[in-house]
Image (cartoon, rainbow, N blue to C red):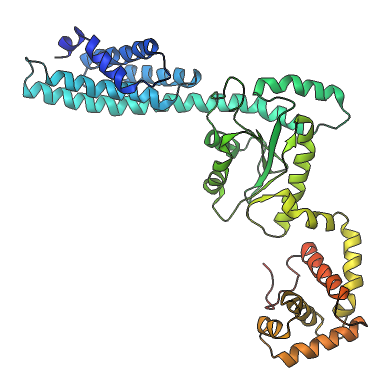
Length: 402
């Protein structure tokens, strides 16, 4: 049956082409590739009922070659798997076929299809990892230099501009800069970098104009850093990738405002990294923007000065002969309840009279009424204290922050 099918391949190849071709493809090239797949299948099955190690090795090489040429794995698999069922359909139409031969051919085709798919995918995946590792090293080197670029370093800036074209990046485009922590320190050659790179985009698939250039992913200071053009379509997939990498509740990513040109990437990275440190300090999780944390970053710009301000505003309460922290929790609950005694009492689990007594004590310690601008100053000092020491900051319910 196989010999008979090999003598009249044209209709079989045409049927495979109709099934696997797409509107934007060169039919001549698709037909040639389909013929190779059909001929390979027949030739392999003529040698033995199951694929030999040599045939599997050839398939792994075919998968590797497809990856290096930028062909999607699914199209490669389609040609070989479709060849199998088209050959089976053609065999069932042969007038000389008998049930025993058809059963043997069907079994062989099923085994061949399964083995072929596995070998093709193995070769493809290995080549893809090699490509990502090789190009990833160059990208990381470029990103490291870009993140350290000083505004007045014209020589380095010119070199970066020249190298950017190799990665599909234009100096004047806008760029996304994102820094992520996954709950553990990452080394320079961390495997997580390769996992994120492969998950976000397959290497070698950028458009001719670089519009679809994959992001550059690297590590710096123990965190993941991602640089991508503003038009990069894969940004929506990033959260899911981080979920898979670290777990939904264990990662934090901070994105800077779009950088207007490569020269602004370093300042954007500085903003994102500074915001990430503050967000980690506060125990935040998920996807954030650097601008969400501008107030916190401003307050923490000079921690010594901030501590002095906190001591000035809250010191009289904390230095009370007794119950200083309890009084501070009371004023925190009062501020959080918008200066409502009943709301503060509910939050603290005490009576209104108790809250009223404590507030009177606080005003006595401060030496001024807890109203108007004084409330704003105390609220700001409470917020700043929480920034400096999350574990020590008071909560309205009296429990420690973890």
